[in-house]
Image (cartoon, rainbow, N blue to C red; front, side, top):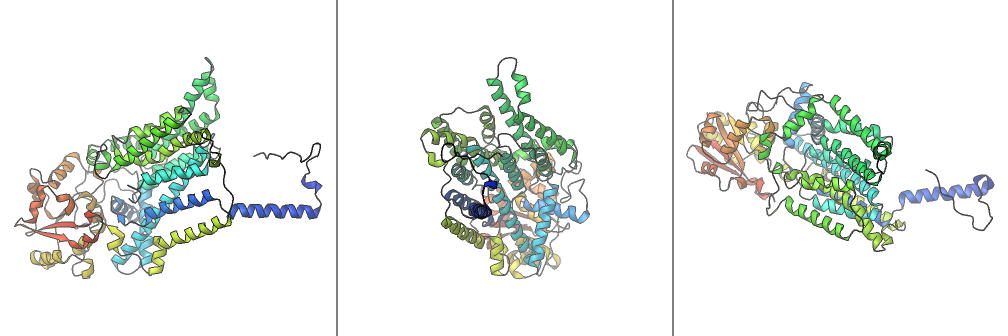
Length: 584
């Protein structure tokens, strides 16, 4: 980068170069420059302190809540299988009830392996009995996911800073994204890594012309992304959208006959085109399925079983849900456009496509939450310029008090973090507080008869001793699919689980039979008998108004409530368990 020289202090006075100074003067100047560099590195401005505060809040939002079960345990189980066998499974390895004809698609194999290794490291660090080791693994997962969230918002902050030209405006955009993310920020799943990669790509592409390093870095990022999560397709779509938007801008400005020449000569378009082409080729080659991965991704996303999942459904109007965040962002965007003196660029119009999909498939909200402030930042800058708010671009004076406050904030965030609390407490947090809605006591009661009472469900213990020889359970288990993830991870193969949340690995017919039985529709008793189900477990909250509540009073079944989950703020922490009296 070329430096800009200051004008002479008096007309005709020549600028003095480094050679014009005597040694003493050069030493003084060098000392002043070193002092300036030290100050610039460690003395902060107010906007930098605000950015640090927002990033710390994002970290704690992800780190402090209990680990919600979602589908994390199913991914851990697959990662464990890969590590133990040293290869990728050709068919789904966890449940005998899955579609045995369908090949197993490895969207997440690298992420699954990393998850298992991180969990295993936590187990080793915790030591002790099986439950203590699980506690250590859970703490490592919580801290690891919080770190991914922190890095995602940091990358988003840099992207917003680049498109808005102001760190203060970037902090405002980050606060908007953080507020709109509170509905999903604490859900730990491999998609969190995909969200980080999306933010990194958005940060990289926020420069006017991507650097030469990105021509290699972006394809490398996409290769990792394609082996960690199926959302890698967005990594191909994003530079394509930006390239198309830039081409439209040039076409509108170009004269007739010179349009194509100007488009192909534009350095931004040429580098984006190279990124897309190189990334597509690299992804097609460097994954377990080869070029078929693109087709498998499309087919899995359109699997009929996926349409039964809440996050794949259209956005509904519920008391709590994505619709509130969505309409808030749309309202803010509308107000921004009304106040902005600038017209939306073709790129911004194309990026608005991220706002069109969430009403039809609400899981797209996680991407729109990041794109929305990125689209609005240039207009916020234009509004500030129109109002004469020049202070928006003033970086603010460096102040040692800001540095001291920043150090205090870092210490405070660290003291609240999971790793430091583990060190202070001398042991990881108990599972009662570290995870929510996860049937770990059920798994311990079934897996280890006669184990420590604190890890068991006493009422289920009594029922097992009364109806099962030696108090040892046998037979198949029919859970709610989210509970099934933990059970396929925690229980041995002797206790087959009928279903878990990776619903695309089940045949359509079988999955719809499971749903009919889950909601107590016609034939649900026959389904349980045909599949030799001896135990049913659901969140009690989800059994309201469905006929499977009849198992509460059925003379052939014993109904048990895991009341120890009642402490949870999440009503799904209270589990209903039905045990068949005469095992099949």
